[in-house]
Length: 145
Image (tube, rainbow, N blue to C red; front, side, top):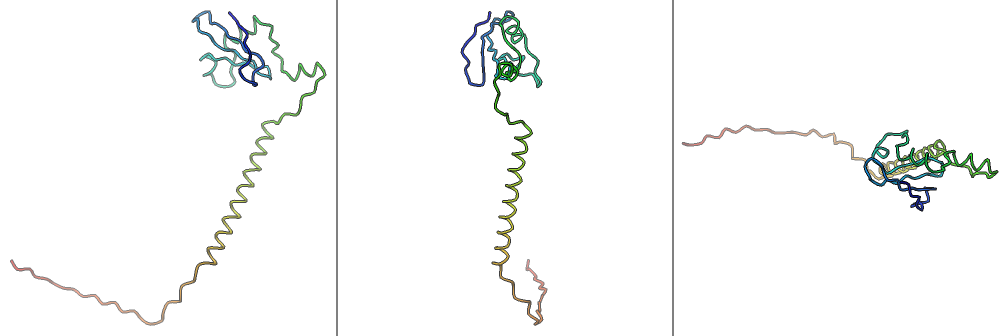
């Protein structure tokens, strides 16, 4: 049994409650803007990426008129242009640039602190030229019984 519900988040376009015919448990199947699907069942949640569709997602796709094409394709067919999307490469480049700037700032602060500490240190006086004598003695102590 499939029941469509209002999306619980702006990340989802559509959501359904699917009652599993084998266990009777209810699972939430959700469709994202990019036409990908997610399911709340353990079989889907604990799979490693790339995740194949579970039986609940396949059931929704087979029984509900779901357009599984990417939203960009659907909008392009309708003549609507999507705004540019930041790719993972652009995000990584931005992050690397920010980290490099942070390292440069930390190095400059370290250099400034080192220079200030070096200037503040007073140089010790040169060692005196007078000889130093050390006297050592040995003592034998006898204890009476």
